[in-house]
Picture 1 (cartoon, helix red, strand yellow):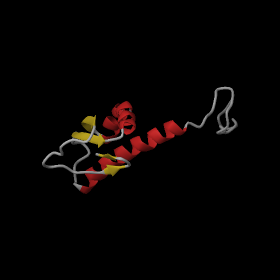
Picture 2: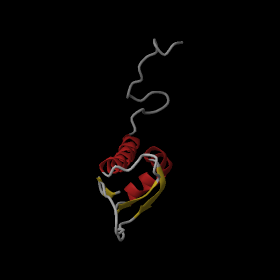
Picture 3: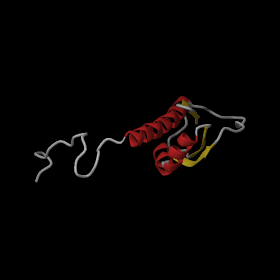
Picture 4: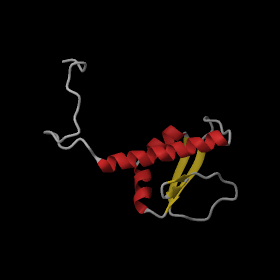
Length: 106
């Protein structure tokens, strides 16, 4: 049949299991916030989107680091990065731009 006449998906459980996944929602929100933070830095500093950047995300929270590391390819592609280093807090470089996201710094 056509998608135009199909029932709209509900958020209630069905034969395939629940459709709501709060953990997945939180992970995607964090991933989108990291990408937005990087894009905001680019915009504020007039850095061309074509320039591939090396970015570090630092956080005390292992859960945050794990989520970002799990979505590293997505962040690299959508933020146009050369590389993304996900790490606990460490020494800051001499020249750097910063965006604070939740309990992390990019």
